[in-house]
Length: 277
Image (cartoon, rainbow, N blue to C red):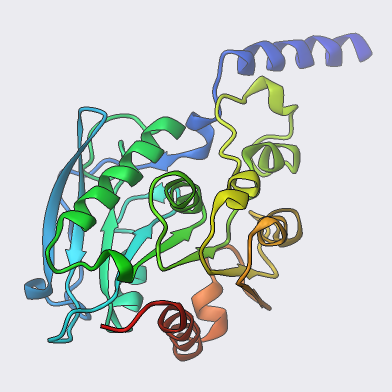
């Protein structure tokens, strides 16, 4: 029996030795077009955007504030599942704050060309930043980053190396992919078998010098709050605020907080650290 188990372990090891984590971390779905609800955001308030990242076309939507005066802009980095159409309800929530919102798809997600990877994620995030800064109706001093789950890696990387936003919001971030692998979230095997990219948010956050709001579900079974969100928060520079959300799983922070409380917390934090017109 022990011999059989040893052989099985060797086979599994060899199988994943040639594998990289990107294929396990990204859960992308390709689309030929987007079908987006107009219940909250009318078509007249959104613009379909084409950008280039690593020679590939990537796509997004710029959502203009319902206010007549220039507004704060939120650059939103979505999670690892599907595409921006899946996360459209998050864009709708942020639209209700009265801010501009830009949401985009990484390479391989939705209509975007290419194949997802750590380097592609960072390149895509910078392309999104460059697009937003190119707009005459976006003030660089009133630009906010919001990362969710996988998107936290893009938001932190850009804030650490490319541009300092007026503030940074992170929802359900992971510390690093080593932590995810070792905790069994991705695969319960040694991280050395699958590591290609580290996505080390816990270390990169030390380089970020902007106010941080971190929200994480206490009942998150996918990305454990103590091993991940709390570690990122502890490494972050002040000023910073940590909202632990009881009853919230990985996707459930806004729901568990309640829409009005969630929007109030997000809006208050952003307005506190973003200069007025």
